[in-house]
Image (cartoon, rainbow, N blue to C red):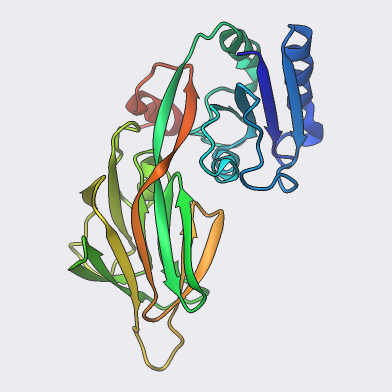
Length: 277
């Protein structure tokens, strides 16, 4: 690899200090690099495939935004962690030189991470979006619980009341799913994890579904004396409002996210290193 697009989160890389360091380093080593200062001016699906890889300067949230910007383009991505925990970001700033050496020498592996596709049917029609981490149906601006009817492969599965329902990929299992009490899944697995968020029950648990399953979430009327409004969120990056009777159909997407890995440690070793225990 010798051609790179550097995408920098301006709130993480103040003054683009580290991004410009990488830019100068790549160019001085005979490669070519382009710096995108900030992300808002880069429209989805408009990242040129002429780059061998994308270097993301930020945290996991920045990586998720890049996954949405790529919109299915299979350009490998590596992240430099300028955030907090950082499960998707591969290196810290002290390892930038070593990272570039390994990229130039093709000393890495590429993992293809599965994504989710959610087709939202509401009063505005049908909208289809993808997610790398998770699709979440939650309440909108209310302290009241919502009620969700769950269908699996077009058959009624259950009805849950609580703060919402989260459908996670293996990649997203260490994100919101972990905070909600869901299981940690090997990142290269192909499955979906459904985890209730603060359920009104003593026995609700996460459920694992296969990559060929279809999960449909329907927002139900919980109370007649208040507005029942839901919010379906795709990685927290794109959000759509749902009313009673609206549905979101979730499947495994035909798109993938290509993640460059330098560290051969397992997800469990990484978990111990990043969050302890």
